Length: 569
Image 1 (cartoon, rainbow, N blue to C red):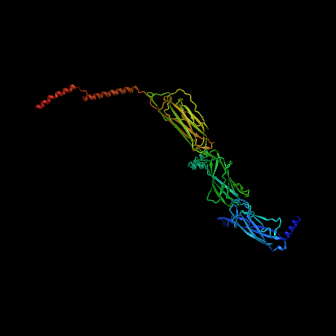
Image 2 (image 1 turned 90 degrees about the vertical axis):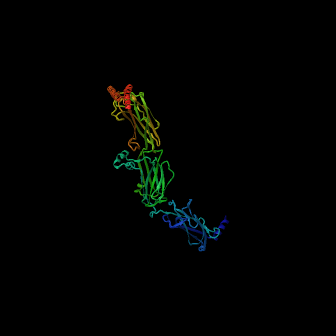
Image 3 (image 1 turned 180 degrees about the vertical axis):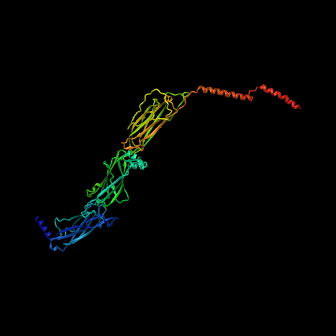
């Protein structure tokens, strides 16, 4: 051990001990992302220089003017695939170089590099310089424990004031494209404004989704009235009856808004606005489109847009960073309501007709069909059918024998009550052209219907006409008018374009006259016929129609001698 110490002492006395001092500074001092002053690889970039200075000092007097061979490695410490900064000389992140330095004299190298457009302007670029003796086994030796690495951070200038504290002022404004009641009345129904008051009162203060509509659009404008806003994000939250469809930038703006693809269970979208920063005094107009959900139906819509950034916005201006849309909705029901009847006309024969009748005849079948042609379900639709069955005097004109619907689920009906049969009464209905709910006792049928999109409901009613009553009452032509209507309650989120949609089934009944010819008409007709016959016979006798054959031959015999006498002359 004593020998090793003596060896080190002899070596150290023959080789000088030096210290290497290294510094790094940048020109300019920060990356100006707003100034792209050069092109590299066909791209706009910001060109800069790192000034690496090395100085060698020693405590040995005879070594003050000697040259020292050094080596250094400069590299940009970027642990990412696409580096933000690249060295010009090597077109890479690393540079190796050997230099000679005079003791006590600082030597500075300019290492040129460039910075590309990037989305990460918050974290600085780290520049590292590693240095040491080029020939560690010869000449001066580096002081034991002396540092051999120096690092420097290069920050990005954020474009804000000298204190580099950005204070943005974000504002957002949005407008949905769904009309209110008056706008719907004027644009869709094309009704004069003076007549829109009734529709506006019926629809209330909500917004109207007209039939056939599947999408909802929101036009929005995002502005920054303050300083640059870094890492600006747009948050979009919407109700569960909507699905996010698209975001489109308007007016050919160069500002980009990129939204994540994942639509999570909270119905929220997070979008990055013009990464890495949203410029001062910039604005961007865009349109959001949503699709209505097939599985979730709500009587309202809610969309909340909010903007935030990494900047510290003033408390006096932060209130306009969000904009909430909330509207009660009224959906226009897209229903097709039709009716059909197997019997539209029936004639009652006279009593002396050869045609035979039963007491209850003939049969009829009424069918009412409701189709939901729309995208939204129609709930609690009221169907009301009134069939004129009994006259005011109690004569029963028809009888219902069956009633059924082909969709049991979601439909609740009150079946028609059978009316007790009473004996028929003589009644004059000739002054009634038709019987309906206003002048007859009707048989009511009421249903509460729930119709899912693209589904239909059929209501079938069958019955028979009572010919015994129809023969008893007096009329020549009588129309039995069945009235069916569908309606929605005022509290329903759906509405019909007409307050009440009404359909009629008209069953026309006619009767042959049943009468007896009076005796005086028979006697008068007989006497008239005999007199006409006598006059005819007299006329024929005068014309010789009734002369005998013998009388004709006698006249011919008298004419023959007279003829011969004339010939002899």
